Image (cartoon, rainbow, N blue to C red; front, top):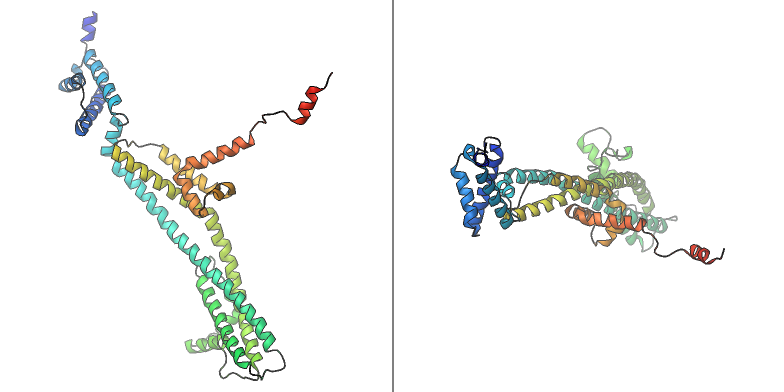
Length: 364
């Protein structure tokens, strides 16, 4: 077979799929260039249109070579837009957007309730601590003012006011503790003295009223008895409330320190990928990448260990959860910090130590 005959041998019969794909890519790039107003030379256009006019089995070596050359020129001219990105922008944007949306919804569905619960329990716990401090001060004051002998002077009016505030504070601590008990797992048992005995609703309500209210009328000559009754109730309430605050601090402290940073880092990655996706769609440079899945894994690792590096978190004037979000959004910054630490550990001294310098000057 002569060289002329070889050049006329149908090339597409041996690898039609390869050249058909190349033709489709070239047509996509040519169409995109026409849409945005980029002028393409006549030879490039002719090579693509000529290849399209022939059946793949009719392609010669010359037709295939000119097609690949046209594709090369178009790719160089339209860079960073590629045939793959044009194809992905048309066919794969919806699945990608759906994936990001599912991730964002799942993370938000977990983060929002956990953040609300952490905020509410923290606020209630702080209020209970403040009320207990206030009640303790009132106990000390009333013990001093109403100690034996019985008070009959003009200061009794102030003591009644203090008793009323004392009882109100005890009721407030108990109410807040009951509310806080809804957020802890498992729930803390209420001390038996604060549980009404079995009976009708009216009897149980009267029991709680006797426990938490001052008895009317007050015996002005024996206010110490009212103080002692309320102090007995307060001791049970304080035990219940302090146990709850301890459990809440442990439970939600673990969530806030270990679990939420991971979720916020993943949410930061979602924000980064959505922003990148929007830019790529605007520029027609979007192509699916397995690196996006790896970025989620990297963000989860960063959110897990971010609390270990106080030097990194102290550089940002933001809460630890905000720092975790930033780590997920810009994992490169966290990697740069880690690499800086590694360089600090492996840094080689530039000058010799004094001992080595002295040894080098000694004569043999």
